[in-house]
Image (cartoon, rainbow, N blue to C red):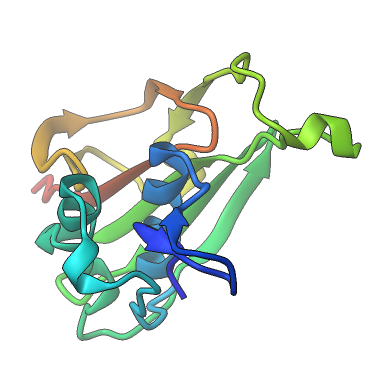
Length: 171
């Protein structure tokens, strides 16, 4: 169940305790894993952010891809994860998650406002993709153009980049 929008766990209805970045990550992971998109918030109480999250057709297409395959974890390193899902058209959905934990003891579980973004260098070799690719940012719905080699990314605390990566024909 997606824990976005207004939710309840037996208590009165309240906004989710997930940050916006955590909600992007939560929805992205459901889509990469081809999990059912069940929401736990009342449709008549959707705020603009939640409605935008739930109606991004490019992200939903990842979840509903006809190939029906789930993503696989291909890299887990230095508090980030890379997940890759093959798509029917020969491209891949790739999620890069800042999985930096909040802490190991109860006092550290709370957000104190000092959470840090994570800088990583994404290498296409990590994605097991050779040659140049075309990259589209699915949350921002914008083409990032052709990529080769490595790219520097800054991922917000518990945030995500969700890309559609298409190998370019190099004939």
